[in-house]
Amino acid sequence: MRPDQLLAPTPSGLCCKPGGFYIDPVRAVDRALITHGHSDHARPGHGSVLATQETLDMMRLRYGENFAGSTQAIRYGETVTLDGVTATFRPAGHVLGSAQIAVESGGLRIVASGDYKDAYDPTCAPFELVKCDVFITEATFGLPVFRHGDAAHEVAKLLHSVSVFPERAHLVGAYSLGKAQRVIALIRQAGYDKPIYLHGAMEKITYYYESRGIPLGPFLPVRGAAKTDLAGSIALCPPSALNDVWARRFPDPVTAFASGWMRVRARARQGGIQLPLVVSDHADWDGLTATIAATGASEVWVTHGQEDALVHWCQMRQLKARPLAIVGYGDEDEGATPADEATE
Image (cartoon, rainbow, N blue to C red):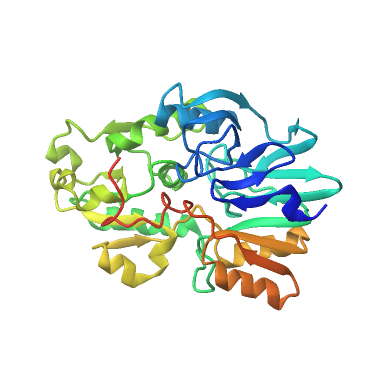
């Protein structure tokens, strides 16, 4: 069996015709296998959805109980057979519940990684390497300039600023699912035990993380807080809120943004970010290339991001590679800046 007979890009997304399913489809389909809960990968309206329990719960939180005709939860390491094709979910290390999906038939294994990272994250299961014949990778940070470094060091910068400016509030822009909770967990691991203020868009998902056994509190809602109470505080919000009227309630705020894109200082300046924090939930250049090499795949497909550089890197190492250029991925991720991300 050729790889494109098992999985192939279509206008609706990656389609497994023999198994009768799609992976992270961008349009409503009869049967969808979903890698994680970010809305560019997890859309409502499918006939049936197969995903981890956490991803299904995230979709319910965002879209309501009736986001799909039916749902089925699958555990990491569990294999299901769909019309003779097997699908096994393995941790992707991206956010809580995120998974790679290994699709197998006729002795061929293709791993669709969704979004992933190989860096430490106390809020989700770590990335698990899966050997395969074809590896489908993202390339959000698929350029050599993107090397993220240690996220704990970035959080130390934030806490140093809090100690130097105790009279100022520190507003941290972070994506509401995954990034915010990881930043909070790292703040707690660094020894900060004061209440952290949350934008309303952060509350539901953050409390869900706690319900899954990930300690992050104590928290306080920003709404209703007096300006004097917010002095010296840390508050997390969607990046769009940093330049919104919402931020005016804080006393002389220091604006921070946690994103892999903060490696590009010009991008931080354009967004009016005073304290850029290079914290990413995507693999950087070294992570992407090391993962590709470690899978043992002889063929690599690149779904979205900086496809050209990563395809070239593969081809220089005698790996067959091609961009899939699937439209619709990356629309809701940390690439959004305070100027262009919609407020939740």
